[in-house]
Image (cartoon, rainbow, N blue to C red):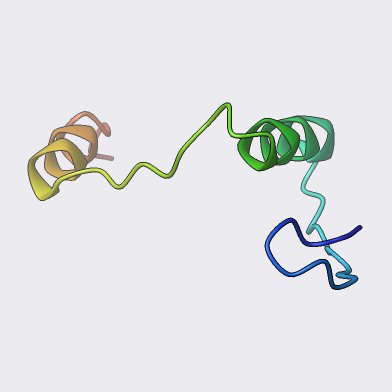
Length: 55
């Protein structure tokens, strides 16, 4: 694969965890500019953690 910015050849390695198809699909969309990085806020992370059941 050629890097869009520099034109150099790059090899991309995926750690397949059973969701490899979706990982590659998402990477393709990101590379095509259809997705962007998203970094959740501390409040959003805490809300997610609070939703995890306590055992």
